[in-house]
Length: 258
Image (tube, rainbow, N blue to C red; front, side, top):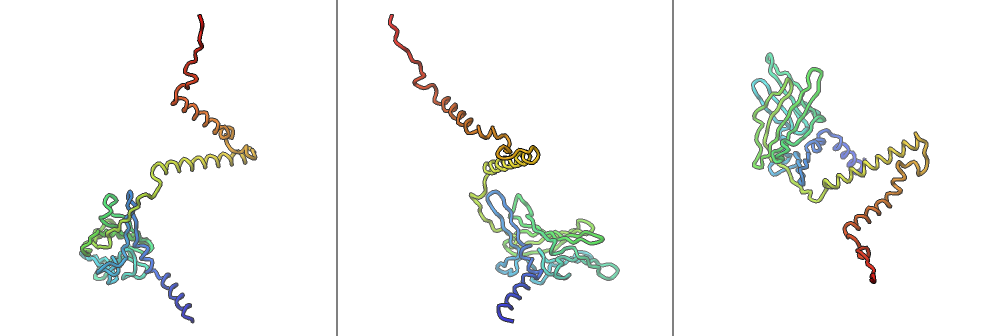
């Protein structure tokens, strides 16, 4: 096998590995007015080469007789490459494990739309025969360092939540001044789209149902043909109103001899 073929094979293996989907899962953008808040949780930072991803492979939270393992925004965990969260409950002297999060069912959203600087929330879920389980991890922006998770909350039969602080949850702000149509441009675009839909629907109806062919298939053709002339008349009328009576019409008097 040549060097080029070997490199191509390694590239394909790299792209097909489930762990590489982490980088797409860990990205999130939020547009607020003229600012774009960009979150890249898996990007390396000083002191955190893997971003918010745990260097040990997983985060651990233990409360009473329940132990929670998870890897933020996907990635391999204690329960395999496709699993991102696992909960273990002690019952009768042994632990019963349940997968509560899958990499393919992981999504990132803004934590507080009114305050995008606060951070993001990563939600991972897993569907089973008995329960639909989920884990919500609130990642708070903390530029000084990472902390937690220290506790977890049980929201339902198989729904859990926890919180940690990390610099990766601090957004990068991109200004988007001058982009977009604005409200007037959006309104104008909507009017044009509605007009186009009306013309298309009317033409199709007249052509196929009324059997009107040629240019006569256009709905209200007489109105559209006369529209330029009507517009010119209205414009001339407005001009005359603003200018007032002309000098030639301002009263012409002839001399009368008595």
